Length: 353
Image: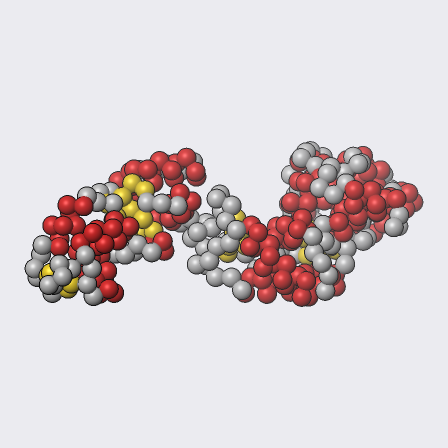
């Protein structure tokens, strides 16, 4: 391992040790004016946004294909220049940074992690394009735009990520620990090596289909639990985070505080009352069905309890109903007096009529 490869690894997740703008300026000096201007405009190397082939072509009265030819010619000339050879240490450092993150990095995340300056990001991206060790993986249904130094390894990582995606569904969310463990299973199976946790996190950023919600839960990006689509989804997330029944006014307040999203109290109430994921357990108080709460009025809760136990004393019925509903004991006693549904046996226990 060379000094610069080691330095790249030691600088993992830190800013780069060189000035990208200074390096690109040296590389561009090997070009004539027209190809140099094309590269500057194409990559936004003059404190501006990168331009398309078509817009540059219109500026010079040439076709977009001709602009592409000039761009490719200019890049090849740079790679054959003495300045390119003299700056090899820079490309070795960048390679070390990519390899330190597992050999495949998400483009935007990689650029941002190395420099916060937008102009420097454009210059750094240019160095990735110009550098011969680097290969771009174009965005598709599974991966973001990414960069690698080893296409074979990148293909293996992509296959592992696709298998990882196929093992998930929109109804399931994971903690960060769980999602990293699941991804690690596929990575180790295909790469046949131990994968460090920070590298697994880097691979997660490569994926287009898996992301985290504001609560730190992970799942498919299309899941309503990861990308809420409406008030009922936001309500579900804040209640699950809370972990116990909440009044709908509390739910509305929590949505605003957690997601910085305006939540009208009546809108929240209208949404949760008609969704079977929520169970009304008291006056304006809702719980999640997945917590084990039963749907229906108090009488329905008593009926379910007695259908499972046949006969129970009054005290036990009250105890069990209060686990399902936030109500007064007298409400339970009133329901037990309904002879159409309940009756007492000779031992004083209640049964179904």
